Image 1 (cartoon, one colour):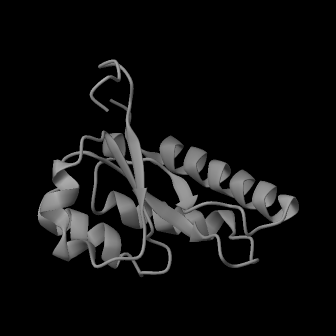
Image 2: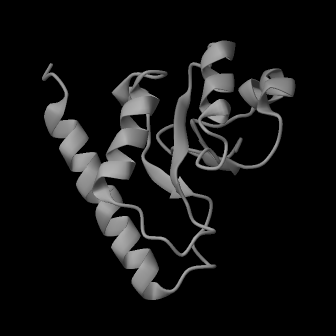
Length: 129
């Protein structure tokens, strides 16, 4: 990342580890945003970042992409609300858990549509600054 322009936002993705055991190393990464597996961990992943006092931006997964079940808007809204209990909205990125290559186009499009709708609903409910 040393040659990236300062205005370039650097993202990384991590999944399936005991994050609490390696938070110092994660914090030292030259990244702006860390997208993490979170959907299958009952929020224990995001809680590891909260307990550590992580100051960078974070993208915890909102739904399990390994399942063919398309998550409802309500389900994703609930996940986002739980993330907001750990981090302020300006520090959160909303994204699915990991990649989408295991899903069909129909499952992917429907799930992403619901994720965007849930995100818009949550944003509309936040206090304005």
